[in-house]
Image (cartoon, rainbow, N blue to C red; front, side, top):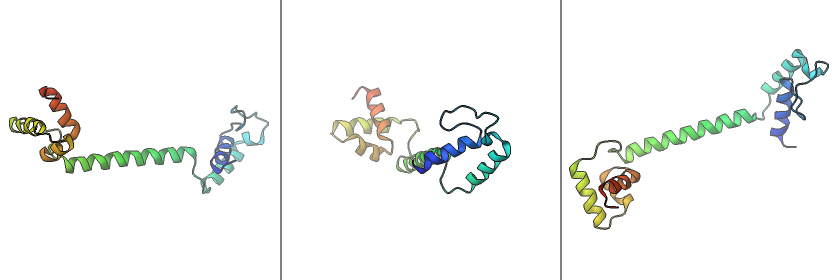
Length: 127
């Protein structure tokens, strides 16, 4: 048995659930006693093994932070992101695309995201 599974089983006992069956412990079971459950939770608070819920929360937080970081990097790399297209930019886009520039290269020139470039090309009927 791995450490996480063992912790999960003990957590279930701490809330009065049989870790094998998933059913509520009978009132006669020693782990159904509130004092025993509190003692188990106290021990869990000092356990060096993270709970499954803690692991999931950390993963969610890391994913959110990574997305925010990526968003900030995009704002820096593509400062025109979200701004309305000017006639000048639209003209440059058409010319650059017809001259064979790749979408990522055009995105760097116009300081817009590659997806915005592709969308605008589609809107213009060029692509």
